[in-house]
Length: 280
Ligand code: NAD
Image 1 (cartoon, rainbow, N blue to C red):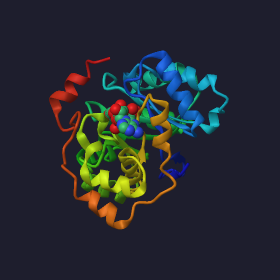
Image 2: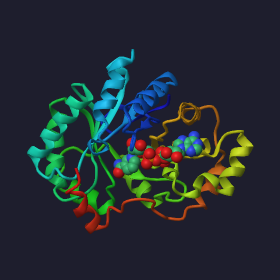
Image 3: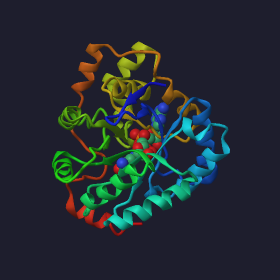
Image 4: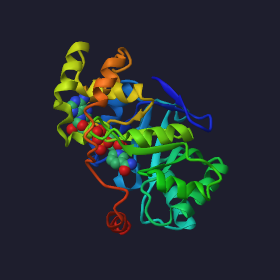
């Protein structure tokens, strides 16, 4: 597994398993077992996914040692203060049955994120989190955060796929040495990106699936990916992307199919952010 070095020196496996919407206990256990068996060591959850406890159980039942795992969770938008964030973090640790997190993210730039960040810095300085970061933060959110931050975010997790490539934000993050992590890396199975003719042609040339080509494209952009699947054969397929390379021409061709089209929530939509704060 390729690892990337974050701006604080911590290593992150560049590919992990996302578990958004996996709430059935048996399905989650089966997915995690298949992932571990195929070499995944990085798992991405969030409090709002309501499966931290199941993920914690599945990982605790495996033979893989905690120090070999990379576990990410995210503080939800209903927490707005320093104390809320500290409490939410400790609840996540309890649910995940661990005494530290590898990565903890502010899920969305909803109200109170500078205060949330102050709490995350304190948890980070206490050694309870190896790296702290943000999610769904665009340039103005990052500028506002950096105005009071003492620790620079290590990661920004953003919706990113071939139809929403985030080229400008990607360049901005690169300048700041903040790692770009893609959520919805395969278009969440909602867009028709998996049937895109340009990608189909490239996949045929490499004898790989379109999903594998997309994941390879992310990796070659130095992006961290956390594709979700609950099917063992797809879980195996999604990590089988380290034995081929896309050419510079293929990368350039994929750059042309960007539609700059989001599939899900918009971090610039204040009404969406506000309503998310009452969801638990
Ligand atoms: P994704 O892009 O990973 O798409 C998953 C879907 O793609 C699956 O449900 C399936 O339909 C399809 N798929 C997966 N592997 C396939 C394969 N090999 N061939 C064909 N189809 C395949 O979408 P996602 O789950 O939304 O995103 C990945 C992870 O990112 C989540 O599980 C979660 O951990 C994280 N996430 C974070 C945020 C955030 O706001 N930070 C938002 C959404 C998701």
